[in-house]
Length: 251
Image (tube, rainbow, N blue to C red; front, side, top):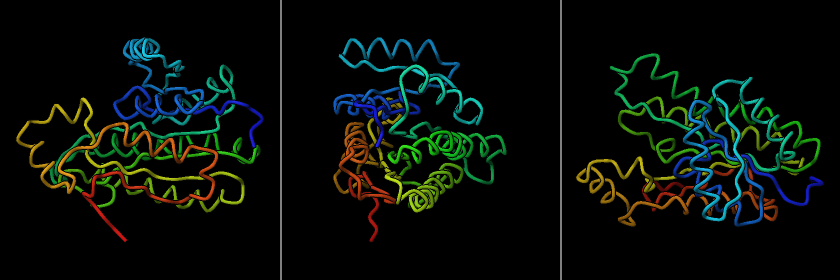
């Protein structure tokens, strides 16, 4: 177990819609939270940090590029140098570049795979040895319902998100005896600034396909992540937790 009295969590994509809710909820549960952001967006990230502070959340920032192994290493090193060793890693950074495969470019494919899948290796590999040495860790990967069921025009995104859970299951087996849990959370359609910008008629068709007849809230994802991150959640590993309002169900 880590000697730190207060657990430290690093959340990549922490200043995004879902990431923000995760940062807030982990802070509410007594963790010291560090939000990772894309380095060229420093001005936006710092404005977000000020907003969080005004809401009562003392969240630190670390900038970098999760698609780069070297930059990911610097993000981890800066966090551990300035805050402390990382007990919880939430891999939340992600992008979409939707296009039917017959029209998709190599650039679009590589950008989504690199950001949504390669980044999981880049970040996790930097923290796993420390967690193994300390005999404690929580790794939570944010996937998607579309990684489970696929989605028209999202071959790149769905492939990355499905691969992410394969990574989860393999690493969970490697670390199960060492006090480390590795899990996936797969959100359905969540009401973030990005999704709410979708045309109203398309939003209506989306919600009609969801048994609960509504979109989820970022808090729904954050609460699930917080549950998995809790030290008491020590017997859950290799799982894929769906948070999708019933949009996709499996045995």
